[in-house]
Each structure stands twice: as structure tokens, then as C-alpha cells.
Image 1 (cartoon, helix red, strand yellow):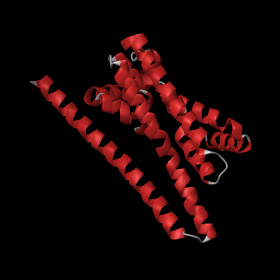
Image 2 (spheres, one colour; image 1 turned 120 degrees about the horizontal axis):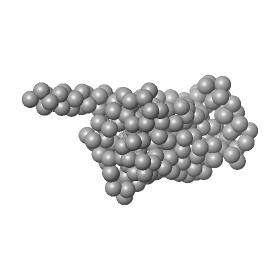
Image 3 (cartoon, one colour; image 1 turned 135 degrees about the vertical axis):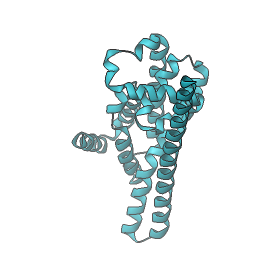
Length: 220
């Protein structure tokens, strides 16, 4: 997998006019139902952030195409759920992902609109939530609002660590404003990491409490 990622990054460096389209495909693929598990978009976007910081790529086209890919991928996954209904979640090819499907359903049932908004930041759940939202009958306007907002937040968040890390390294090499760049870059990365870890722990705790309540209701 790492060899493939290195080849893609090298291709982007040597073929900058294709960078936007490749980022579109990565963001699109990571948002697709089930298939998103196998797309290493997070690592590639980190590398893309470093290329933006070093001036190899322009930020504008990357942001536009990446956000567009994320929106289209989630929208297609949502429409798949609306079209196929519950049978898409019961398909035999999903046997290996029953746990992910169950967690996505529970998460969406608990948080609704907010689940769609933050699911992109939650690992494997990101490519299940849109389809689950379609299956469970979420109004399309509400879904698309959450879809667009989450894409606008998600792409810069994934580009930022690579971008800031590259700026910090470059500042250290040049010996100019090194402390400022390093402090800002490391602080932002630490804050992002803390927020993601804290949110995941909070969600897991709430899911566990919800399961206990459901279990107690069944026993009663």
C-alpha cells in the first residue's frame, strides 16, 4: 500500500495538472459505501498538504476538487441507500462488515444530522453513514446540507497537518521564524489529534451507555 501511495504522490509531483482530478478521485472513493475502507485518501491528502506548502501545487484547485469529490461520493452512497433500502445492508457481501454496519446504524439513530456531519472524521464509519442515512429515510435536503458542510470542514482538516508540518520543517531549515512556525504547526496538529481522539472516546462511551439501556429495556 505504501508503495502505491508513493507512486501516486510522485505522479502528482510530475503531473501537476492532474493533481485536482486525482484528489477528486481519492475523496470520492473514500466516501463510497464499503469501498471507502480501502482508499488511502487520508495519507494522500497529508502528502498533498506538504506539496501545497512547498509551492508545488496551488491550494485553490485542490480544495475545490477534493470537496467536490467528497460531496459526490457521499451523495451517491446516500442515493444507494434510498434506492435499495434495507436489503443493501443485509447483502451477503457485507458479512465481514456487520459490525461496522451495526455501529453506523446505532450512531445515526443516536445523532442523526450530526452523525452525517462528523462521520467523515470517524474512520471506517465514514463510508457507511451516508448509505445508512438513505436506508433510514433521512430527508435529502437535511442530508445534503450536512454532506456539504462536512466536506468543507473535512478536506482542509486533512490537508492542514501536512501543510503545517512542511512549513515548520522549511522554517527550521532556513533558520527564520523557526520557533513560531514550529509552535503553530505542532499546536494545531496536537489540537486536531486531541479533538479526534476525544470525540471518538465520547462517542464510544455514549454508544456503550445506549446499548446498556437497550439491554435493560429488553430485560424489563
